[in-house]
Length: 249
Image (cartoon, rainbow, N blue to C red):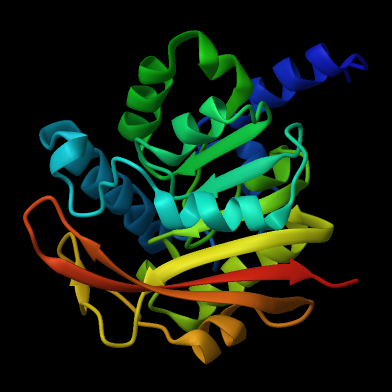
């Protein structure tokens, strides 16, 4: 295993970009978890999101924000150092990642199920992509997140609400507990309880503050809530609820 910081980041990055289907991904796992039906679901989800990012300009997607104002304010409230490791879960062709780089953060992770979106983000960042690890993973059953170092902040805008099954949310909860370091932070921004019932042709779960608390559970404690109505490029209104959490040992 490489020892220098630069070598460590290079090694980690090489692991993070590997495809999901690899022998080590299923070693020691039950056949029930990795049956044909489950693999078909994963590849169907990838095809769905790759198709959206392949055929739609990022500025025309129903979640595009030219300036992710609420997320940036909540990140600032975390009081992180500029070398803190920040993971953007469900980043897509993110505007948050470039905004964080503009503010001096240099240890970022972009996680998404769509390789098309991650490739577009990497190309858009140019030389600044060296400060970002790109992880293609399915958050309904994450497998690649164990390849990255712990993070000081887990940020998720509009990803958790796609996890409509109890088991999927349980796996999400396990992933965030494993990845966020002690005294770290989490920011969730999901469709509010008075918000839309589907997005991009998929059903979603709507949240209020208490439901977000239950989604994370112990050891996270909520420190801040923001209700925000996002205006889509089409002019549609999408009520969101954001919450900032602190990991308590």
